Image 1: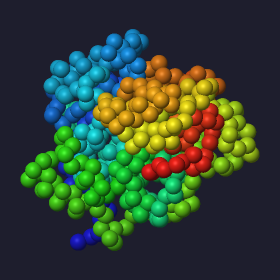
Image 2 (image 1 turned 45 degrees about the vertical axis):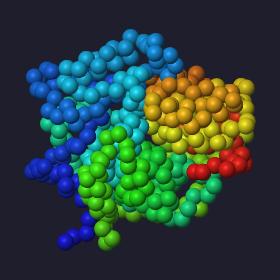
Image 3 (image 1 turned 90 degrees about the vertical axis):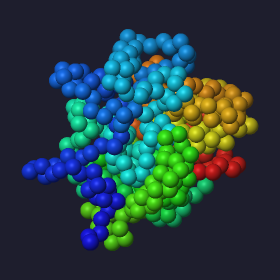
Length: 461
Ligand code: SF4
């Protein structure tokens, strides 16, 4: 028997047929929907008179447009209102479960899937959203698809795809105190570049990856696409099974035992050959921050801005050779499907506990889901935040892409725990510096870019 990578094993398990041109018809286990990319696909189905083939395998949420304050009586622009209304109508019409605004299971699509146990090892998962790669943290083939592909899955529960090549990224050793999964992935992208993963599906491996919590693994897989990869995955292990045990939609009883037995078999064979291999040492990684306008523009927090991209430097109002450390910032955004989970809020709260918010900084702390919001309240995180002068908002994508009112004003600097720092991503003219929740916390209390390692009393990463 030939040795196989985990990716190839999963692909083969889901391959319905191979066409003459070499592309595969892939069976899709789970289809996540949200209000932005689904309306055209639903309209396409309607136009062709085709029913939604497997509504029970789809789950919908509202996340991109919704406000993060005052959700009980939401104020939304006409376009946002139209999108959420359409989603509601379409879900009702096709019998699709919808976790709309204010629903106890509502939240960012890539946060709720895992926390509800809807994301399970061995699955193929798609969504009309690039950061679907997040679900790869459970050992799934998960990737974002375009509107016409969303329609294809709605109509057939299958997808026409070319099999990508495989890239294994191994990170040996242990991360140091104050260095998080966000720093790890920003470091990898800064070393490999934003085009390194093009045509590949990445498997992350090595001691540093295995030592991460499932939430940390999600942060890594979430940003796999920022190096151009189709997606990223991590083989499931005891950490994964412990995370999934008892989740609302996880298998239970006999089915749980059977599922775990199967999940334990999901790993790359020892002698599996990858099309490409990269290796890093965790001890080389420090807290990272981006200075430019793509996620590959990361430098160590105490590093010097390189002089490689004048357009990006001009947009960011920065100079080559300058240090970011101690630079004044205007906004801090903690949230998104990269870092809007409970562990991120715990890290942020652990650092700001007993300190006070900097007076001249606006800080938006946005939980990734209703469950995260409730948990933050139940664990006393909200109290710590309030005592320090912060406010916990309501769940949504928020300033990750600023489709609602959470926009960073032009020219203002924002330390953001999200995944993209493109020009205008957080609002026209906004200047985004990507970093971890710990670095965001340090900046939120000092008002300046600060090395979080200098402020940590005891923070588990
Ligand atoms: S948080 Fe940002 S990256 Fe994640 S789904 Fe929402 S808009 Fe996309």
